[in-house]
Image 1 (spheres, rainbow, N blue to C red):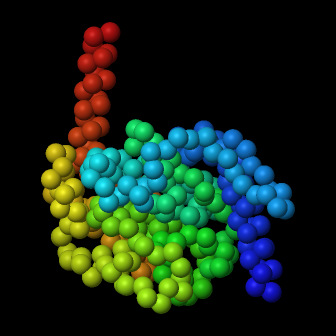
Image 2 (image 1 turned 180 degrees about the vertical axis):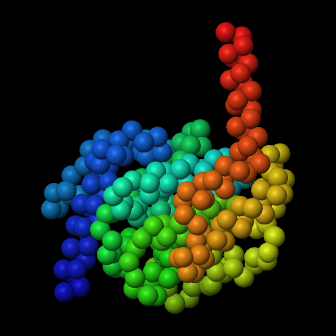
Image 3 (image 1 turned 135 degrees about the vertical axis):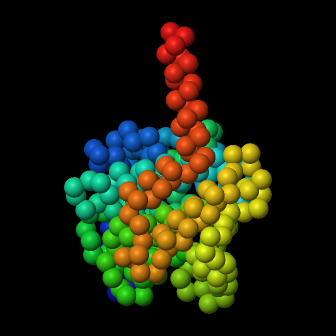
Length: 266
């Protein structure tokens, strides 16, 4: 019976993944890898993407060559993508939002891969192929329905990882020797105090880092990982608050100035 379920689960995941990459809505989205082809034969299943990546985000998070602005850009583009999905009339949701499913290209632009676009609301815990550290604990404990607030939680974990330079090393739910501090959201809730910043000290030395941004983005991350889904912001709210960060305001002003100079010279 267990083997039959595993087989059905694998087929469901493969089918849903193909649906995602062949969905017309997803075509040419800038933060998605390009699908070249796929096969769902009984003995051979796989998807082929067209991309030469720098590395996956989970391998780059703890390294110093990913600076503050690059990290903010990654999280901003991820938020933009999720808002795009959530704004659609159909109740679409994206599974597998995690640092290991985000590639960075040579320009440090995020490219998402191995995702599932799901419109069915009822999803079993056993059907989730994502790492436990990104799964909404409220969903896990209550055997509830996977909804958009669950994706806000997963987004919050990626945000925390980017600003703290910590990665959740959880691959198996049955790991009995798991140290709670290795779970990012548990560590963050233990460390967080009102009006504090959890931004890594090395990132605070970056030329474009602003202390107020550190406090605001930490607060945003903590709200995204609130236990009760009703207390979490929507992706529209998340994007609005990211847009108001000093570093992105300054970048937008610089781009506007450059554009104005170009118009004057032409």
